[in-house]
Length: 318
Image (tube, rainbow, N blue to C red):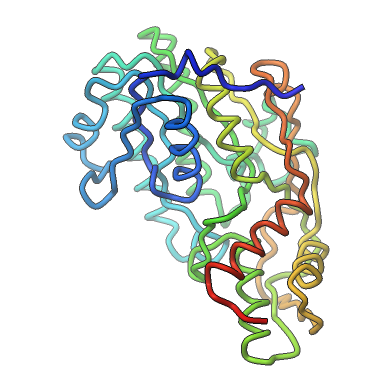
């Protein structure tokens, strides 16, 4: 059974959320404020977390730091910006955790990525398999940069007794997602492709790869609740998966989006483009046992919500 956050724990708690204006961050900040937390969500324009002095400023007088800020994108973006994906992400995480430790922050919550898992991890991915191989090549610079947060977290607990935890969320989706074709993930990218085709009266869409890889997706509101529960209840350095516990092929996903969007055209698979990791699905038992989290939004329900949001927010008239 799903646990619920403890309002008394969060009331007047000073919480820094980096990346708080982003997709996941905006949902998380809203939930924390509803629980009575005093949330600080600085913007990247004013607080560049690749700079030590900015990290020192944002962690000052905070009780909990939840580090969501990251440079992220889909397969193409990762491939074209490999150096930035590594450098920017490892620098932000390393500097922020160090400054949080020096400021004697009570707890640091680091968000990793499913891209940190080895390319051929047995499905479902169990946390114990995290170090059993090299990540999928297109995502490796990003995945390894975020994975170093786990190394730092465990090292800091060992040497300094610093309370830092590390969560591994799957790909998220939901209202407010990033629909920029240059950096969006698969669900918003496909939704935009479908609605663009409808708007331009095209009878087909082209999708990268073969459609054979599988992915798991967690609805953003569920992810926010999972982070809050872990922040409140979990105090160990071992990584914990946050997922929904299912997998769907990219082919089935594309077909489902077409149906839910009312698009009757053809899907053309561009096999010259990379597929990415062959399969992804997390073992979610640890999150359930350690802090009572499991996803509550069915995939069809969540997918219909994001499609409805996109249709409404972009003023699309079918």
